[in-house]
Length: 76
Image (cartoon, rainbow, N blue to C red):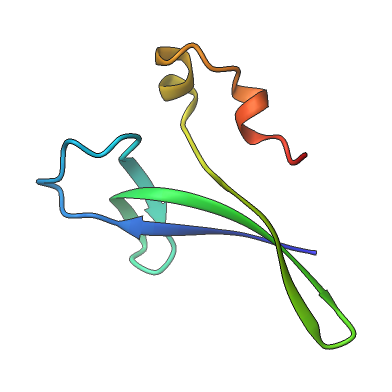
């Protein structure tokens, strides 16, 4: 099982897209304005399967929208 997070960087002038935030980019080595997607993949016998993917939201964003943080980050 491989768990990975990927940033989808946006221009800082982008303001009307939901859930944009400063996320740490390992590629850039700093925080960038982006969406963050967490993915799960299964690798077995030379095969690679995408299992699940979920957006990552900061705790403050979840609280602002009255979402349970655990419900937004738990793999089902």
